Image 1 (cartoon, rainbow, N blue to C red):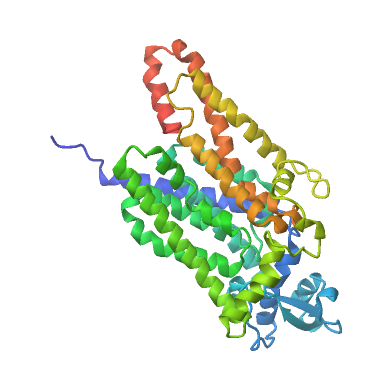
Image 2: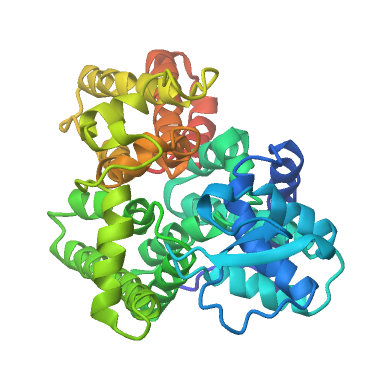
Length: 446
């Protein structure tokens, strides 16, 4: 029996429509991010890569510099951490005659700084604006592509929730154009993980991309690495748990998770070795010890306290996590992210109860596992990067938007729709029954 094939013209129109929709989504998100962001949010951190832009713009000699992030000082000022004012970099960008000197920021390789340096060397008009817009566009493109992959696997509701929650997040907006954080690099592993999930038989071609994505991200900065790396398997793990009975599918998913994990760790290790080599002036072991003693312990769960807030060393992981689920008395009083996250967690058992009412066999399904694993992913930095999280409550709420709030919102919306359908199922006439079921399949794919 011959199968009916769509004419090439219809297929081409469908592809054109998808590309056009992705383009509109990307441009709309990029415009919203750039216009609605706070331009001075994290401007102190952003001043470190701007130093390299200034060096290219005014032909400052950097032959002795090893790092892409640097602290810039105005003329006549003593060059020490105590005298540093991040506004100097912005003043020098406007007028190169104010330049006094630079000292390196050695906590990371600073790959982004070197990239900006060579872009600025190309004599692009207003390189600061150009690079910020590019960061916004790349973040918007990655999120739009994530939404497309989510649509292929889960239907319309999850990508819609992911897109709308992301675009409404003040944290994602404010960091979207940051030249220091390069936020788009946070979401590339998640995007690759979804491609892997939708194309399990082609996973071997994707492993080098995971290596490259983590290598680049680690070279730009170590902040949030546990969350970024776990986000690459955020959608693979729930699928694997739910396919345990299907041995063939379970094996494929396990191999994919294992492969992604190994190549991601190799990417991180490669960046760390390069950084150690630079930090140890050619001696990798000296560099590793220096990074561990003077950087890692002050930001993670080490015994060395942070000089900004010494209390960070004594705070427990639970205290830090609760801080991000509640208002932080020393932080941003108007922040609602923590309370909204807490509300989603409280609604979680309600959704399980509804499944019980509907007489389902299992209380936990794919969506529930996805919700749980996204929570584990997002809290990993609050626990492993405890001191950094304690000191930076004005910044780290953004971690909740690495999938948890998007998935939590989707879960709540989905169960509201199911409740409405469940209690009105008998009222749906036979004429509309097929249409309702078709729409239900399009919106959510269980």
